[in-house]
Length: 303
Picture 1 (cartoon, helix red, strand yellow):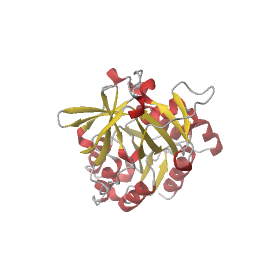
Picture 2: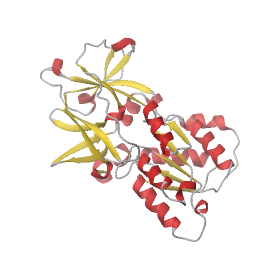
Picture 3: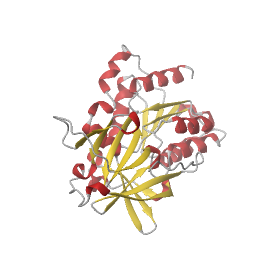
Picture 4: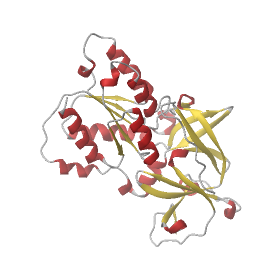
């Protein structure tokens, strides 16, 4: 079952989510993370592997690790495992496969219809739900596949120790605005930028929050660069995604002068094309923390 190609216009604040089930519970994943869907396939178990790794298989000459999502979620296997589905994904520069019980359909929705779950209920940084999508009368839990992959393979995530490559640093008070919905990644970005010498950081949890803050800054008679020299934004965010944020900034005669860098797990050929068409000055995949600091250095050195 190959992935259906659905092309969204840039900056419309829409996305497609694939609704799937694990033990009759309904979950979702951004279609932009999916390479294809496959019927259940025999895999080769690996000795001493993580308990949530079923094994490996090789579709289309690419060796793939299969993660047992029901086991990870603490759910039992389906009664007929051979009718199950593999979701083949590509994000953070890694190909992976996730074993689920069934797929339902693809929904095209607005990010406005995705709400951030209550951290008191979903465990804040340790929670697996990145959003709750309302589709008609149905609520679908969007799962944090990045966190799952990092839990199973820590080397797939951001490696903070690589920042030592940057050597001695000077401090800078040029203001940087961060739009990132993940509490864990927000914290990592603050730590990385602070370690790199940037002391004037402002955090927001989605594009809408960032845009509203920019509009507040704009109301004053003070140049916008005094409030924000650079925006670092994720792409996937509830309420307003990064592409919509950038589109609105570029349509504003004041805010269009503020450079924006995308730091996202979704940097693919198609996403890069969209970001370029909207005017992003740089687009980096989330593991590339050293490259991000280098890009920030280069942009702010010219201001």
